[in-house]
Length: 174
Image (cartoon, rainbow, N blue to C red; front, side, top):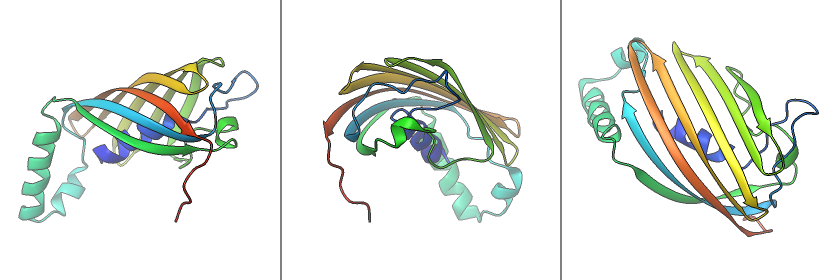
């Protein structure tokens, strides 16, 4: 679950939200981008009680151990490549089209963007704020904050990221 939230936030930096004529895409190049993100997690993910009830004792023990390690508060840094198409720069940044989420662009210029997203589902609410700054057409930096709450549990994910344009060509997707 944490991986999906982090990946959703991670991929969202690159794409530009459109909420009408007032939204201006970030002035960045399409193509292959290398993203480096450092995340810190605190709290416990809000997993619905029925999901936990379906786990075997072994699965639950593995889950509890993984959650303890994840929420240790120790920042983790990851780097990966992401392909950004020209079309993505001119439409909704969240390509998975989460139907349980609503998005609002709070600020939009060619060099800065702030996006707020609220996702509801499975008894969990996720509030996400993403701030992106295009330093130039080949470099971006930003931050995000995610709060997930439900079932009496809450988890926070804070991230800082930097991205650099690698080139115009993206590897073929299989």
